[in-house]
Figure 1: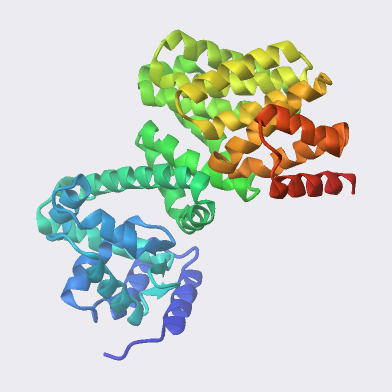
Figure 2: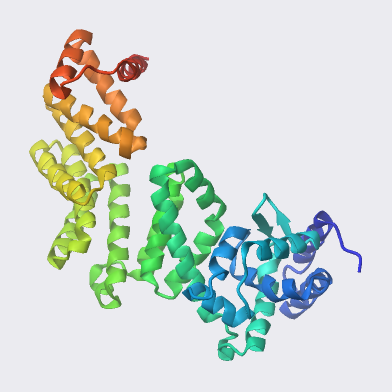
Length: 420
């Protein structure tokens, strides 16, 4: 059987989709099925057996994730995969399957292990997946897909958590992976909310949220958070009966809402949200919510600082700082040291501000590289305030060591840039 080129087949499918806009569903399904059957039936038996797994993915797929999900017969993911597809696959197996599918114009390679999925393909493969599940005798009542979907959701929840954490230590790689996987993360987020799997919904939204903040897509993040609140419940009284995961998801969403209010200069609105959130957290008296309490205190400190209630801001930052340090979370602790320095500077207590900024830089260099530019800018302001000799003398007194030449050069550059 002659095979079409990838470009020709994809264009034919696009034309087919356009042709059937507004047509009867039965005709659309029949015509698209015929078009896809042309290439699918030419595949090897093993590829036809396993390729329907791609029905559960959106737009793109990483071969590595297919391998991680399906490889281990002892894992919960590998077990459910084997139940539906009859065997576990290793990385070389998946690469052979995807390369054969690419040669048949069913997927398009975007890189060594990343493949583009045409919009029509999941719809078509869903039918094949249902047939595969029934053939395997797994949960025939719903096509054998429900449990597989749930396990893939838990897989993506774990994946999202891993790469959200990697944004701290390996931001470039983590951002790349999350951007490639964005369509799948969004699809899994919708599924999690539909299934009321609030724990995985939070993992997925947190990862997307960190990504969107870094690449300037905050309106999309706000929309996702509003949708999350609509799904889980606007008020905590609506959420409590749905379980602890739902309550934690609600708290995360409210924290994001408060942060948005702060950025929009709605200080009173942010304060109202955060005070309610902090009161609910403290009532729980559960150590596992310590970090959430610290985040709420940190954000309330920002509210107090903007309202120039400096004593309240200091107290809140210090409470948050203690929780972060006790938990070994120096990434977050660095932010509160920086904010304590900013409050001291606003109070014209420049000696104390300098101590906090030096400490911020020391921690940021090891644990929070995102904060390094702000630390240098703040120290640049202190250099202007004290002058070179006095600045170096105070640095020596605070640290019991000379200011390293490379540090001073960077601080001096930041000071000069702020004048421009």
